Length: 284
Ligand code: PAF
Image (tube, rainbow, N blue to C red; front, side):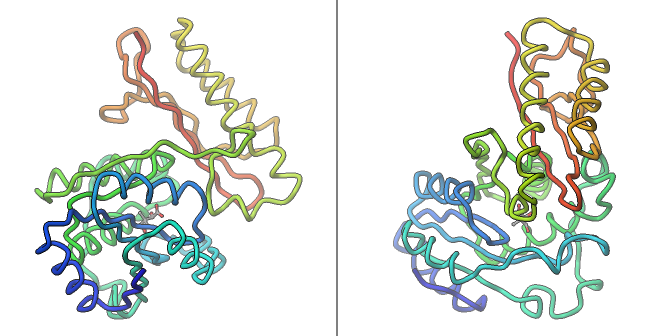
């Protein structure tokens, strides 16, 4: 695996691969790679000939009081994992390269509306930070395909919208969330949980799964299900931010008597650690 640190080096490899007829897949990450990330790389290897992984903890998507400084950085370990799975290129830019040290002056890409709801409400500017860095990475690599996890459902939705709106000729692939044996969605932030919090954390997925079961078996009272779910989370020790049933096509509030394609999304804090999860499903 080649580790590229600058754009010229990365682009010359891409050019070589493309002229040999290879399809390029990009897997953007912030590192601290776990099985979830590796499943994205696996998907990338299925849909393309060359797998490029970027590792960059993007400051533009973190708010002032968020966990940018303590976000886990484990480059040596990540490099080892990517070599083992046969990734072709790792790109590890720094802030100087991505923003020329002028974060606040950079050109930004924003996807209005959908960036301001759900996670965007408690993390203003977060999705503009995500869309901006992903657009930069897309411009550097011009991949045929880019692969993202479905755990970040709203992020995936926003990236698909950006690609469509900006006519970027890139296929966006979503990959199902990888879970621990007890159902907890894999996340780099799980490492912040204390032993006690780690025991509580799977409740988030249990609540989502219970709500899905209720809806599939005909319960159409969305707001009662949401209120009950929020209460269960609070009683378990979470500080829930939102728990909501939405239409998958536009993330608007779902009408369970009408809508068939649904997603239940949640964000909740356990101590200082913010967890997100979702389940998506289609009613018959
Ligand atoms: O999902 C992530 O890890 C990040 O938001 C991404 C897509 C790599 C952009 O920094």
